[in-house]
Image: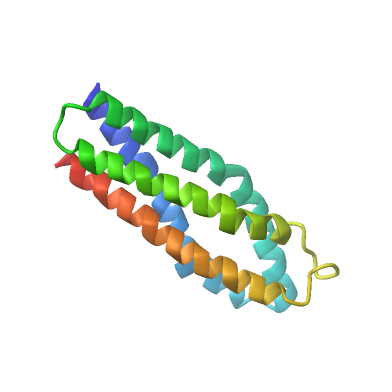
Length: 148
């Protein structure tokens, strides 16, 4: 049972990391190459879609990691799993405090109502997202290491 939990958790977290990794390195460069209004509208749509799905994914990942840590408490690698969980907590806190407030504004913008500094706000979101990606990549790496 623990082995199945480990595999499911690693896959769920790994896919989440892949999605989040693709945003700054693939999706945003494509969106940024669009004409200004189209790019801004794409960011708003992405904010709505991500804002609906990612909280569930982040919290679900954290719950799976916590269950793995509890179920495997006396097994090798538990310290790595606990540390991965702590990093996922950091990513959730970062999201709530730094990224979600910007995202909540972005998802309501249209070319007619966006603020003058909308590009600066996007750049700020991007910078924090890079940090969050680094944190969740580290958490994923720890989970993979815990499997060994």
